[in-house]
Length: 406
Ligand code: SF4
Ligand code: SF4
Image (cartoon, rainbow, N blue to C red; front, top):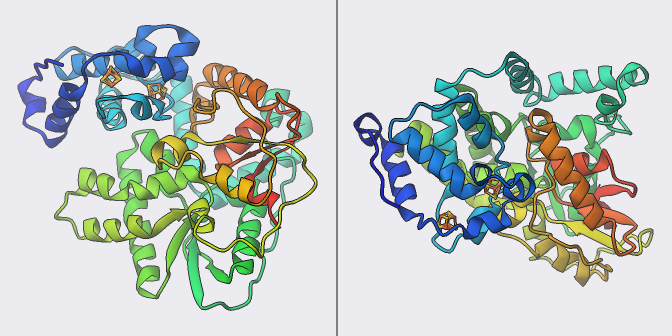
């Protein structure tokens, strides 16, 4: 694609990066075919190719409008278009640049501004988030149905399983919302790994991986999370941690992207860059661990007969591990129901379901139709965001796939 980036952007590293990405796009439109928002809204500007055009226009000097920003913000960041693109266009890097520029130029409507601030100041902080969830649960009878449905059905602080001391030690990424809405996933992770002879070490400073703030273009906050986590996890690596485990694919995808983000925000010469490379290199999704182990000590829960598995975009498109969970479950004897359009996003997408509820709910309902077909009696997935989002409307239980294993 021909570009004519204005001088002020051309001089910057991000401007040059954006120019290279724009030039790699041949404008074929294959990506539109797998874009959930294009399929739903039918507007070229709500597909990847249209968004690439909008970002090109900003970089060429056109003032972004509220509408431009809305088309960019309608993007789920699901990366389905990147999986489809034959030219290897790094769409999400370009989107990040476009959204950062649009945020600087376009004032948000007040309702969205408040919501954004609430998300940024509550969700990435486990104690604050837990406080609001507890408050919501205690007042759920008085809340509108739509809000009450967002609350966890079983809100309790369970004790973590105490494993035997093992010679193999791995560090668990706690994440920011797990403890408040699904502590049992961490407990199950610990139990499963213990059976495989692996001790799970609690993260000394549990908090957010930075994905939430990063996707909302809150740069200083994201940098703070990056530095804090890289320092803390580097220390754990030096103490002999074999792997940093993620049981939420959204967090795993973010941590694996740390080197690029550190380079972007702090530069390759920063002391954090080498450390970020080391942290990302030892970060693995729990499925990557299980796929390398002898699984004979594990058995499948016989409670469910037909499992419908939903592969989160952050696992299939960002971490490029599309079939890994299904292969593990199949090797344990699971009966997996066929699911139509597995490659499409469920509409959860981090804070998207809060900021863009109309699109998010339509995608969720479509996804649930496909998952609940073929006599499935449970839905399993690999990311807490998808799990919680699907749970708000599902007729059958929605669980983390690890919860199918004993
Ligand atoms: S992003 Fe890729 S698939 Fe989409 S129009 Fe550009 S080259 Fe084609
Ligand atoms: S990231 Fe997903 S929603 Fe965004 S343009 Fe690509 S396919 Fe569409």
